[in-house]
Length: 281
Image (cartoon, rainbow, N blue to C red; front, side):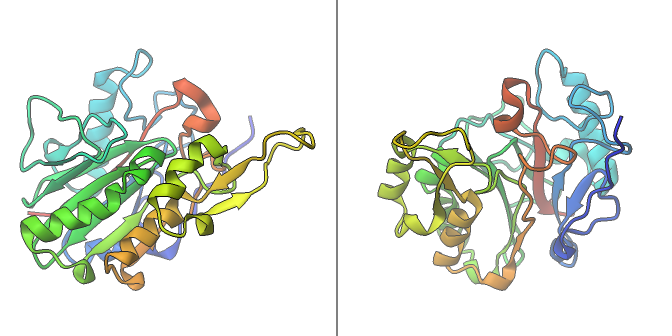
């Protein structure tokens, strides 16, 4: 078996043990946590390996394995696993506030908290995880921004919610954009892109014409690729988050099988990364 190399991350994401998660240093400096998990701990593991840091509950990955992985991650980050709160993601623009663990998991695609020691989290396997910390008010958020959520402008709506409910200022926010499928691999057709063009101003700047499929014949329906991360970065900056406050992992989930799960690459059996943010108590 070919030996897989140790992962490397941008300087903004260097953590104490990148075999478990990429950690944003800017969050550590304000007593916060921003982390994006990788798919295995220690020697690189296959998706169904017992070492795999898979946070998706399925027939092949039981709830006990997910609990074990949450404990492993929380130990690595030095936080309480019981403070990690998630949502049942439905590719919507629904936002929930979670100030403590709940017996039922809410259906939403963004989780916000005002309590230190609570860590909103989202699960992804190509969609873009967005983590937000506002240190002036002590507010933390995790956002699941897939194609449909992006069309619904969930990122902009989360910032608007934080401003109206808590008085947060975008200029004070620290934001991290995690691993997601890149424009190199995210091929879409006109039917899918039409709603994006209708929803996002100047959407063409985020769309690359041309297919990766060299077998595509002349005269066939043209294909395009979308830069999902760039769209959401635009939404953040348009709402007033400074460019210097946005930390981007710049890693494609589909291109990096040794690091990340990818639904586009692996299909319905793909695992899930976990991304979380919050302030330490």
